[in-house]
Length: 368
Image (cartoon, rainbow, N blue to C red):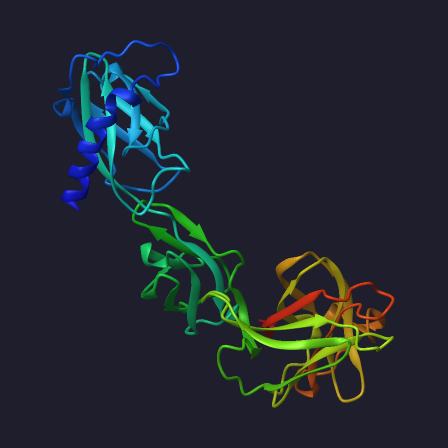
């Protein structure tokens, strides 16, 4: 690391005369006769590690003479405020991330001071597995740059955690949990929240297509639904299934069934049960999302944008039939269900041939 810093210093010295004229105000170059070491003017820099958006405070003397700050050998100026004894600057969004860099502080009167700082990209939480849990439940946090976590909290309670890799943390939901956000605190003091709260309840995973589930019985497509393909993305997405609306000569359209088996008994309060699944569309569509029992289907027709999105459809909002027919909320007990059905407008008159639909993470959420 020292070698990299020294190289950066010599690179800076070799280009300093060209970049110093980029002041935005006049052509005067106070360092044209040489460089004076002003490191002794810096008493302290309050952060040795930071991320974009953080404020860094420098204390010292003659700081009111600072007229320019550059990060590493970048030519983009860093905005700052300063007095004789204190200077503050904000790490810009376009700062070079991922390593220790040099902060170059230019003083009028030929002065240059240099300090080092590590700039990190903040972690991102993409999803929680399960999405609903009780106290004592193992929890997987999936995202990016998660190895930067210094502390993890669930509903405000600090928990022990294991860094699996940069995309996954594992922990356990604390006793007494009644719902709330998951948050990651980094070494910079930055806080990152989960995109959705962890629900106080139970998740029944039908299929995420990355692991086995005793409740999943396979899939079947028919009509103008075709091209069944299991695909794989990065770890945060994993495996999922893709289908293409294809002209197979079926005038009414087509649908995809994800079959269910052996669901647990005792869940018959529709006000507490929600179907959740991830859907990706190559173009905006209105799609029938349904559950089925041996005799009927129950669901709703909703409009979705292109791209990935999570569908959350409470049983209490599901109508009878292939849309939202009456009565609403007539879904039977959970253990009677035999499948989840996805039906886009796939008929010959709908004009959607070639549209691609992907499905992932089919589950039922039972709120406590």
